Length: 178
Image (cartoon, rainbow, N blue to C red; front, side, top):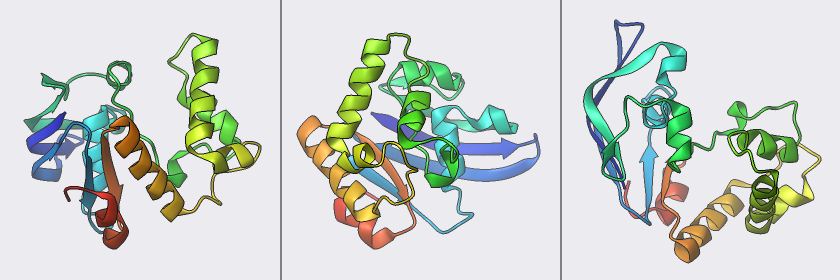
């Protein structure tokens, strides 16, 4: 479903950040990317999700394909429309917004309010703690609980997941590949 082939990323036209990154995410599987701080995990995700340009970065070599089509030159909004979505970690959510307000912000590309509401209901069904804390922040969530839910969604709905995590032991318990 997702393939990176020998990807190189450069920031500001001169700073080489990634070199020769290749990976394959199989349709309906869970693949994890592991690494210490500064190893290039976040840059890899930004390259996949089309967010490099917002930070003056670009894929200068290699290719990224999603569903058999090259995507490394497409803007982020077009990728979201194709179903490729990056879920950010805690420091990338809007800390001043409630859980529900963050979900609404995440659905900003959907114009149909009924679909937004149905999507939020679906999130609450999958992640009951979000509903319990819809008027609070996301920080109290437990990592193990989220991983169990991701694994269940993968199994029941064939959700394809690229998981980026520092906790190798936990990530490799649910991933097929690392």
